[in-house]
Amino acid sequence: MSHLRPALVLVVLFTIVTGLAYPLAVTGIGQSLFPAEANGSLVTVNGRVVGSDLIGQNFTSDRYLWPRPSATTAPDPQDPSKAIDAPYNAAASGGSNLGPTSQKLAERLTASAEGWRAAKMPQPIPGDAITTSGSGLDPDVSPAYALAQVPRIAAARDVPEAAVRHVIDRLVEGRTFGFLGEPRVNVLKANQALDEIGP
Image 1 (cartoon, rainbow, N blue to C red):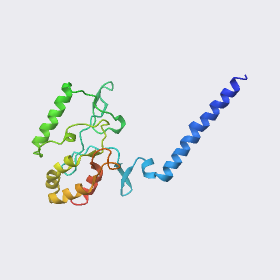
Image 2: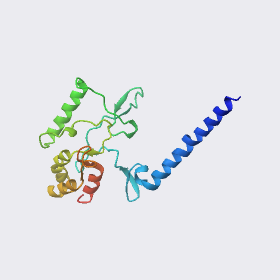
Image 3: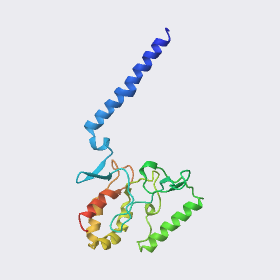
Image 4: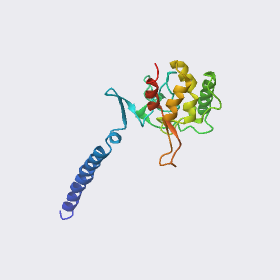
């Protein structure tokens, strides 16, 4: 009993400290100092949540900036033991894990490149136009990929290319702290801004 009592006291104490007090303190600090970030960097329009700054969405209309391809999957409704492609499935973040010798990867890259050429998009093809991110949920694209889409978006919206280019140019975010990562354009923010310039 002399060994059991201290052990039980420590279990209860550390359960309270690490299981209750610490999470509540961190949550309280996050909610008070960084409420938007603590709640998932949600984007709202007219009081309705339309997405997050941190999770990409699968925009496919010619009127919008397209994201980079996504390798996320979901269970096959016909056979739950198998997976099917489900682009930008936030419940299944992850890359494809396909290596450079993968036939499936080669076929997907070839199909993406052919689709790019068939849409008469500019050459050369930006890398993020045909490759997936590690998470499959990348919310950003490179400025080169975003600007390559200007003619398609302008034609679909029947607005001058300069207006679309202006939207994208002003939304280019630089490297974090001036040296981390690469310049980028958030697809959701750009598409919201595009809705303000034309139908």
